[in-house]
Image 1 (cartoon, helix red, strand yellow):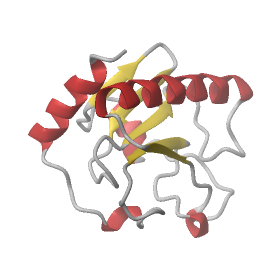
Image 2: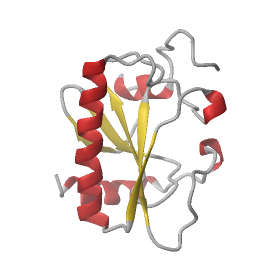
Image 3: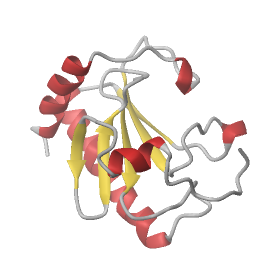
Length: 146
């Protein structure tokens, strides 16, 4: 998909917001939703999305929605830091398939990193799936830090 197109109400994040697909919630407010990635690049890898914007990418999103999402990115990154004590935190966002975007609902990745881990970002659809019980346990640790 290119940078232009119509928002698909059937994308996986829209389905999560509609309660049709389960997710492991970390944080939620009136405007945003944060949850653990089921194909994590690293322990604690999470995603933050807008609950109301139908933006496919950063070029489409309303300024207000972007500000709300970024405030949540900061909250989740800080809670993740307190819970997991990583050496660094990688915040990533992709726009268009050639840039690596696989879900066309604007989202930010928050990826804790430790010394010795490979740098960069693996193609998302190629990662291993996390154990749901482990994700739940990890979510409890991170949620306790909000």
